[in-house]
Amino acid sequence: MIKKTVSCFLLLLPSLLWANIYTTVNSTPGGIAQITFESRQINPEAFYGSVPLYIQSLGENQYQVLIGLPLMTKPGSKRITLHSTNDRYVFIEVENLSYPDEYFETTVKVGNTQDSSSLRIENEKVLFTKTRKTFSTQPLSKGYFVSPTNGRLTSVFGVNRYYNGEKGLPHIGLDIANTLGTPVNASASGRVILVHDFYYLGKTVFIDHGQGLLSSYSHLSEVNVIEGQTLRKAQELGKIGTTGRSTGPHLHWSVFMNQVAINPELLLKKPL
Ligand SMILES: [Zn+2]
Image 1 (tube, rainbow, N blue to C red):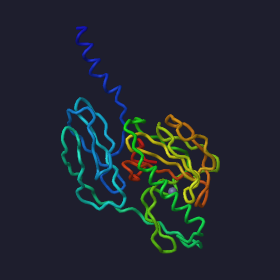
Image 2: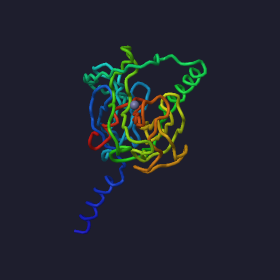
Image 3: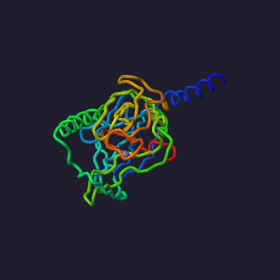
Image 4: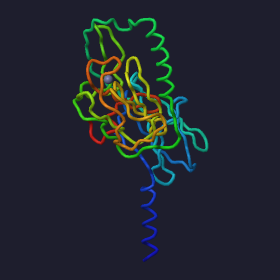
């Protein structure tokens, strides 16, 4: 009888130890695809092209791979490499999804920046890309993400933006508007990997959640964390502001998985 109780306990134990994240799977551009597979190797890896993917254990020899799908990806099958004792390929099917359009009338010509700013913008593009490529092998967060602030959702992820009728870059985050100084919190636990005042994004904090999962918080009026600092889920990192190119106080919140910006709402228990 005692023996039976002990074995039941051991069966339950691993699920308490696994620090898995939860997501909504949505195999569309800007979404998350998922593969489950078996491997006898302790730390199997998976790649989309040459980019390492988020991978978590589901049970004995069972693994789950999460794949962030680029907003610009074309529908159809995509090849994922599973690397355990040997390489094998698995195909995922990306479905079609069209995002809404947003039109802006502006007196400032898009891309018309002064020379001193253009060098800054170029350097910041390099910094942004380098940060986006961060991959720490350990998972640093678990469960669902939480919304980083309270407020009004003013622009969703993926909208195609047109400025004076000219197509600009799509929106790769969520905009949540509220009054200046409203607290902004970490959407999940992790480590601060960058604090920088960008020309476009303004004061921004990047958090590493492990295995290529990152989040960023932009247009902040103030930042109260430093690079290298470890944050708990929902810990305050700064305040809502309108720094950088912004039309009013709001938070621009982005989530990256395998270097790809994905819809942050897919990491929340319920969409905003
Ligand atoms: Zn935004």
